[in-house]
Length: 180
Image (cartoon, rainbow, N blue to C red; front, side, top):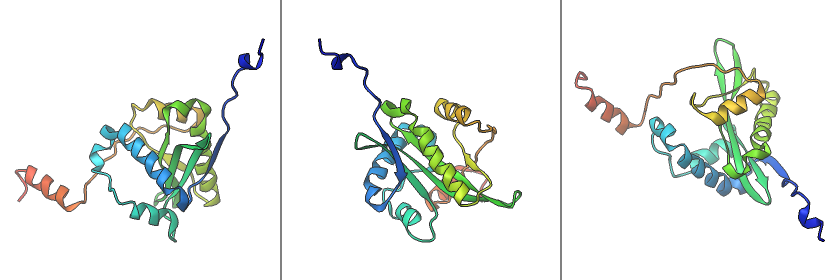
């Protein structure tokens, strides 16, 4: 009898590392997959720009304005996290804003989300940030699970999005009969 066939499979090794220029295509692929999955949630933000120039500038051109990490397993990029720095006037301090965190569904049980979050936490500490913040729809089960595992304080808010694209502003003015 072959006992190797009965042995449980070991979970694949997962590695998380900062995104480099050579990872841009993998990052864009994961971003596109993520955007498709949360398309309804993203409607108020308008269409995604197809040209990655601004993203690449923010990630790689000084001064850096964004940071990202990729999770890998079995030689495949399986998830990513991205963050930017914000500033709170009231606290008089910087904070790290976790902009996105996404792991492909088939890999979520491995805790890749927590590994990606740990990278963001470590960056926040290195940058001297007061805290790490993220936001998501209140109905997001994945975020509720993540926040409960990290002991994050959940603060209910309403986020307003004011479009600044010229066409969006013109369309909103045209839709308002009281606008002169």
